[in-house]
Image 1 (cartoon, rainbow, N blue to C red):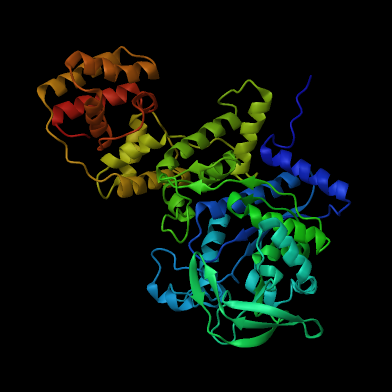
Image 2: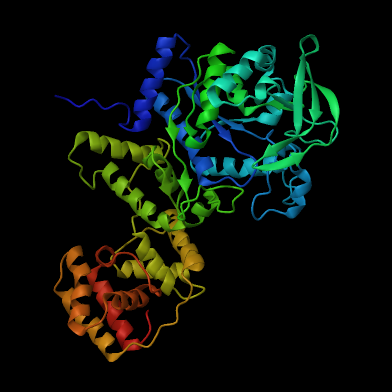
Length: 534
């Protein structure tokens, strides 16, 4: 019985089909199916922020694969107030706490119109590097230009029902007294310190006091100003408890995935969308957050931000797409240490895509080939590219003499049986490895080796000569260490120092297989002969 493959066989294709079928059942137009991603603008964009947009775009691509037009809206939350100063940012920003980030001057040389524009531009640059096509919208400009006016009026006219929904969903009674709209204070220019307490329907204005607000566990004092604000003048914003819903209706959004950390806001907005705005909310998918290796959520303000730009220094945008698209659910811990493995895994997917590696199961083969295509945003290379294991490039980059690194690596690759073309792809890969060595492979002074340690390496060389498999190569270290009474850990340190200039390295068996047994033996023999790694 033939196996049905939906689209390219991935989760994103399956989700796109579910989305299309849902829209058909709702009777809505299929002329354009929009997905959305909110772009945080209050600090350096991290990989989680990028992942939100990349995943929503992948679903939009899945819709296109099935013959329908789609679009990703990248909506910058640049009307949000600055809640705290991100780690590493100028302390001068303290005076701007509570102000909309679109109203704060760019503290990095004034190259952008505002702090918010600068932060958003970094994320947009990363999206473009990853191949994401999007339609950009600024929250600041959306409010200024009246994009959400109809939704604002409906929300304000039904503020009592809105407050009840928020209390029922979250147990939060605040919006049964306050209105879900924050004017920008005419007195101090801050946004979160204002408290709207009365709505004048005929004038579409709110009366407010700048009384202060608790933000991130700290109290931000208001300036005491009392005044009124026209909710259609673009001098304020809706609360998050209702803004998502307003955007969904105003922009006709049909799909938006979201992180687990905002699940409460999404649930409330779903009800607001249905019960107040009479718009069926978009289909959702929830994903979990990226953590740093210490188990903390990656955060702009906490100082553990891992930006896409950091990844691009050591690995390709497509390898980052693989990290983001490979799994949708489940928390993952990441750091730059993961980049080499994703670079190599992308090469393996490419080998599957071009038929160099066979996958017997038809469904699994389709899924892996489809994943590769999505890593390239459905614009994969027309032919298989150069594949050189990352650890080999790092090994060569470690040994390369200053001033002629590229030439040295090219020459050695030819010696090892690789015959790369002199093209941009090779240059990029060498540059990634050189950057890796520069930042993570500090020079290690070689300790003197004892006669027994020398004999252990000689024994290892002899065993390697008779070995044929990765398991044999791995076990040879333990055999030599037992034979000469050397702790395995010490012998591994010596081997990596000889081969990589560092006491640590990748798993030895696969490394030997990738570099070539003869090449490893040659380098170990040179190490013993000269006293220094090549």
